[in-house]
Image 1 (tube, rainbow, N blue to C red):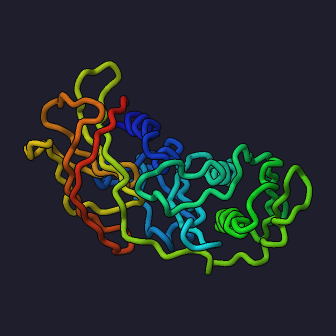
Image 2 (cartoon, one colour; image 1 turned 180 degrees about the horizontal axis):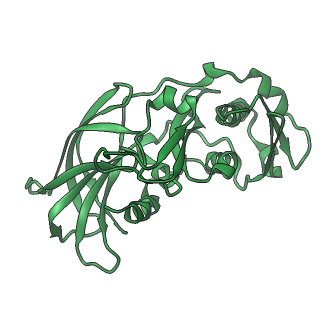
Image 3 (cartoon, rainbow, N blue to C red; image 1 turned 120 degrees about the vertical axis):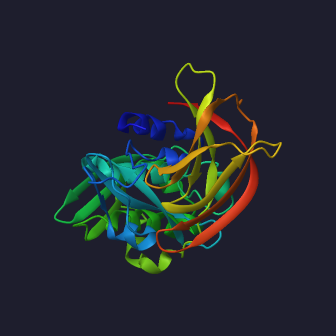
Length: 294
């Protein structure tokens, strides 16, 4: 799979909001003889998810976005993200945080959305290590019981970036009640990660093609795939070569023959993975297939 194809693949992952947050980065299929690109990962990323696999070319940036927990007030959960655009790192991270995780089924009921509908990041500026975030007026109506989680998510997401020593939160350019909560933010708000999770399964085909050429199983973080088997509802195994891609967050089955599969076709999957910090998980299930084009 070429770099351009991988870029297109990443951009088609809108089924899984988490995966769709990758902004064009590409990863390897096989360990390259010589890495031509590199990933600059924050210390927060490495602490939560371990080392990042190399990229084919260019410089990519790995970081964490901390989403508020729906189960423990004020707590946040780390999720991995990537981008090529260093200049807009902070604004991209905050934009994704405000947008939330949508209806991501793998984390249904576990993530809160403290930002009121219509909330926007108006501006992100930095002077001498102080990052000032200016939100739209909708943020003023955030529920009081969710305000600390909102602040923790914003502050911890920004503090991971090199050189950031202070975070200031404004709404429409003015001081607000959230600012006094910034001082209460520390690393104790970060919940420990559970084992890896399967996000879903997508069949990929070239634009205009009738048949699926590969099936991608997406995970919530970089993993080493120990076992990955896909089959139809009749139990017949789908034959093909399996490799890893998208920063080792996807297991890709390249079919030996084109597959005549339709949107929503049930696919049986068996998987066993270990993330880069040794947390292991496995599962068996039947998942309706999404179809996407390169």
